[in-house]
Amino acid sequence: MPERRRSRVRTGLGSHADLVGRLVACVACLALSSAGILGCWEAGDAARPPNIVLIVSDDQGYRDFGFMGAEHARTPNLDVLAASGTVFRNGFSTSSLCGPALRSLLTGLQPYQWDARMDLRRERGIARKRGYYMLDYVTLPGLLQERGYRSFQGGKLVEQTYQAAGFTHGLSQEGDDFRFGGPATELGRSASLDPLFEFIDESGDEPFFLWFAPMLPHSPHDAPKAQREPFAGRGLSDQAVAYYANVLRFDALVGELLDHLDRGGQRENTLIVFLADNGWDQAPDYQWLSRRVDGAHGKMTMYELGFRTPIVFSWPGRVPAGQLRDELVSGVDLFPTLLDWAGAAPRPERPGFDLRPLIEEGGAWPREVVIGSMRFVRPHPLRPPDRDPISRGTAEPAFFLRTPRWYYIWYEDWGRDQLFDMESDPGQSLDRVDEHPQLRRRFRGQIEQWRKAMAESMSEVADEP
Image 1: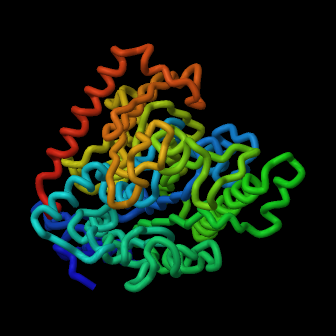
Image 2: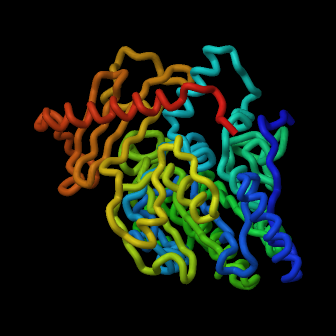
Image 3: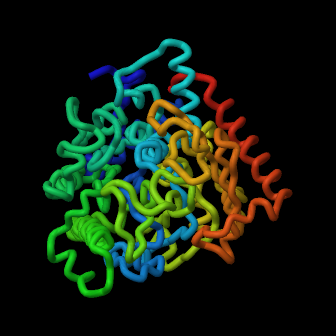
């Protein structure tokens, strides 16, 4: 496997069982810390960094959670998790496709920034083997390792190996199909969660970061009969039953993980964060045209159902329970937020905002709009009919901008746009762009400013250590 650009140094002191040993080690650590060499925590749970568990569902619509008011989907374990913490109801993934969204969680970068850097690498003739691009990026697990964290990658990664993404432990290995197939993506499907549980148990007093991203409720929607039965006889299409059963199947895995943390006494010092990597458009009576393509407003589209996701934070006694928030937040906000809670130095060059002050103290939120982009989108009625069939080699960039009321979509390459009033038309069925030329100009101008800022921030092909 190719070597990383810079080495990672494990600095954890949590494995010292003896109190005196901890104090002596911490004194030495503080001396080094003052020189900026490494971080430390004092003995005792109050000052020790929390364990961090990041749970990511795959292809799940923001409406398909009990705590979000689902009519048909059942998520009892996620409902309990949401009730125990703070829920951002207007969260947005950075992409309506899994790969770019997962890379954002790992690097804190918008997909537009990633693409700009990859374009620059190609222009300069710099290449890595596919699946190893992450070696040139500062990653969340790598930065956490510098704070003494062990880390485990379980589930979908969309990188070749867990080491390439900065994890100390994991399932993705050289030679696996790093998108579909292999032990990582079979976790929770044909394989048990035992590797996760073993990692947690072996961590002892050391803080750990757990990436739990099973490929669920992603297709194939092949949940066991017992998880299909709750949806039988309710007038749902066969495909809807299969999808809702996979949602329940994913929720059951979350329950297993929460139970293990509780039994091991880890829950009290564990920050759990949940979101979906991208959305899904499943109407109760809808039969899909393809097993990997949902309704017209879902995956790989620019509509809200493709991007929106609840974002949940839960940490007993530290994150307010039962708090519902409606600020517009993004998947890139998790990067600075988790670094803050871990006591790691911030990365001010990343575009996200730290959610911790908002969660703990409330107050003003600096983001007035959420902007996102896709380099490849599905064929669409607005797409010019003379275009060749869309392919992975032909970019057709598109952008969305969301305010508390409006949702604007700009298909730049097609020369078309749309505008929806989310207060009166949350299903985005009535395009009102021609009625509001002033909003069209304003929103397009904001997207242009955002795009310029994103591109300018990617003037180098690799991160500085």
